[in-house]
Length: 183
Image 1: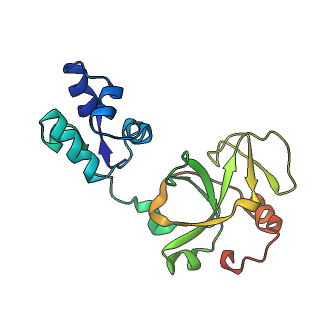
Image 2 (image 1 turned 60 degrees about the vertical axis):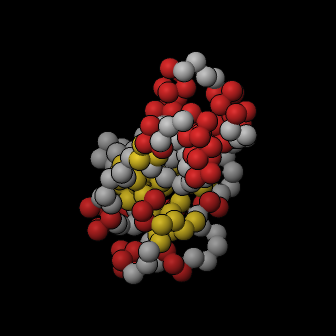
């Protein structure tokens, strides 16, 4: 999260202005107001219209939250590490890194596989991983091999664990497509 609109909500509450009234007065869509409620970025045009309507300055309706610097964990990413992934428009998701350490060092992106603790059915592309106290994972986690994708290293928020070498081999063997990138 880079911007926070809590000041806006406090200001309109002080002035007895509803979100719906604000939306109508600045000719914004419901989606824009919802996005701001989730502290998502909006256009400067929207900020300008809000400031004109409320007769205020941008710093009175929002604040910029400086993102923490990239963790030292990125210096030693390893195959099998489990991180929380922040992907725009999606819920934060645990993912396992699939690439070798050498491949990780040489590229700005890393190939990951999402993990989940809940399945409604057991599709053929799911591999069960056993979590332990040492791995930092829940007792049972599932890797969805069809969901492999590249992500920017900066999207990996924090390391939460690591899968065992046995489970990592199981995951890599379960990937049906030929991904030379993970070796």
